[in-house]
Structures are given as structure tokens and as C-alpha cells.
Length: 156
Image (cartoon, rainbow, N blue to C red; front, side):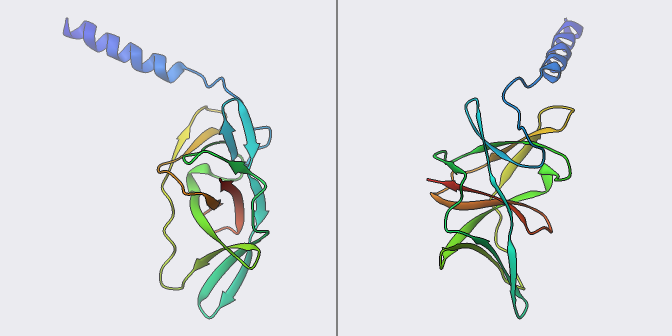
């Protein structure tokens, strides 16, 4: 009896692992896409400009609003990995100042990243990125560690 239960449990695990993702796929690698049902919306992929003052750094993105928008407070992203490692992304809230988006990194303490959950969906590099908490309306950025590359979006 115990062997049969173990066998059924093992079969269920293998069946779950064998399931393939059959939803929409990002058309371009290395860009997180907002998932809205069967529609994918590319995030705004830009390079942030670095401004230094003493030991503090501010990263600046032109424009007050992102072109990528979502009404979802807990968005889900799909990303086809290439050169950008999805598990090395961090999510930050951006401040709007003087018609541009900014994030401030003081010398002594980095801003707190918003928790995300990153899951590999397929062996060919498809990843799902989920925000672990509800986001307030505003501007946000996913950014790879140690890079000025940003993937911006707006929650409205």
C-alpha cells in the first residue's frame, strides 16, 4: 500500500514537471512583458542616466510616465532570457521629479527593492516574474543588478 502511494505521488510530480507552458510567448528576448490574459505588453526598455553627487547616485529616466501601463496591482511578467538573467532583476518604485522618473541610491544604503518571485517556465529560457505584493499606482522599474538598463512600467 505504501509503495502504491509513493508511486502515485512520484507519478504526479513527474506529470507536473512534464507540463509545458502553452500561453503567449515574448516576441523579443531580454525584455520583460506585462501579461494581460493572452496579451503581452512590452515594458519600456531604456538606459537610465547616472547622476552623481558626492557619493550618492541618482538614476534618471526621461519622461514622467512610462509607455507600458497596467491596471494590475500585482502584475505578472514573461521574459525570454538571453543576455539578461531574470533572476538578477530587482523591482523599484520611481519618483517623478521635474518631468522625469528618478531613483536615488544614497552612498550608505540602497533603496529597498520590492519583492518579486522569479520562476523558470521552460527549458528554452522562458521565465515568469511575479510581484509578491500589491503595488500602489505609480511608476516602477525592473533593473538587472549592476546595470543602468531599466524596464519601466506604470500601474494606474
